[in-house]
Amino acid sequence: MHPIDCAELYADGRHYDLENEGFTEDIPFYLRLAARHGGPILELGCGTGRIAIPLAQAGHDVTGLDMSEPMLRHARSKLAESSAALTLIQGDCRDFAFDRLFRLILFPFNAIAHLHDRESVDACFAAVRRHLAPEGRFVIDMFNPRLDYLDREPLQRFPVTEYADPDGRGLVVITESSMYDRATQINHIVWHYRIGQIEDAMAVPNNMRIFFPQELAALLHYNGFCVECVLGDFDESPFQSDSPKQIIVAAG
Ligand SMILES: C[S@@+](CC[C@H](N)C(=O)[O-])C[C@H]1O[C@@H](n2cnc3c(N)ncnc32)[C@H](O)[C@@H]1O
Image (spheres, helix red, strand yellow):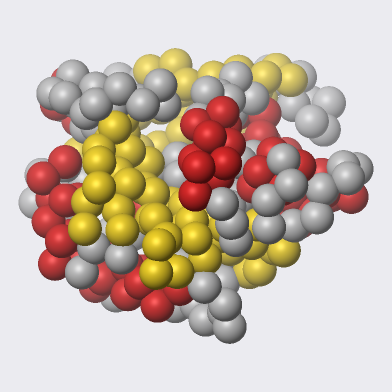
């Protein structure tokens, strides 16, 4: 299996939360899913608890698994300030063992793109199957790859986001460049950070394995899952060619 190479990207949970501050539209979707299917819920790659904490606050029994210590540390600090109870475990989604089954196993916000090879996906899906309750559902959210995005000019930089640096160094402005490898299906993205007056203060790799819709369906099928539905966005519209997301709900 390829090593997971995103430690630098997730080196500081405060920055992660600020980078994604404007993105909340998936949370009501996961709250609806949880109300429909019930807990216990396991979130793979739970990060700073952006989704897990609202689920726990809604009264669900939630376990979050993530391999990044800094992301989990930030999740714990947020938990300390809230009334929510949540189990956070450091571990690899390709190799985990809990002595309980889950009615919902979530793999949100493109986290599957960190699994760069088939062996990693197979290992993760096998672990999910071992932990899915008989009536349980496995839900993956991955963006629907757009060919124009993958075909970007590698030297060009595109805006990502900006926010006030949590350490008071001024405005953080992130732009990205990317080079897509059509053989490996890995998009080699680099996030360039301007911090205050320091242009190119950091360059952080964000290598994303791109999963095309029929490929994800096949991977799930050959790993023993039955795809119940594929949604195209968090409004639960059906998946189609120009949908922004591929949100797959699978049974074990
Ligand atoms: C895009 S973030 C998503 C975080 C959170 N689910 C959210 O929606 O905000 C991806 C997360 O997956 C974690 N991750 C990547 N590979 C992993 C692996 N093999 N096992 C566990 N966590 C992993 C990263 O550390 C990171 O926190």
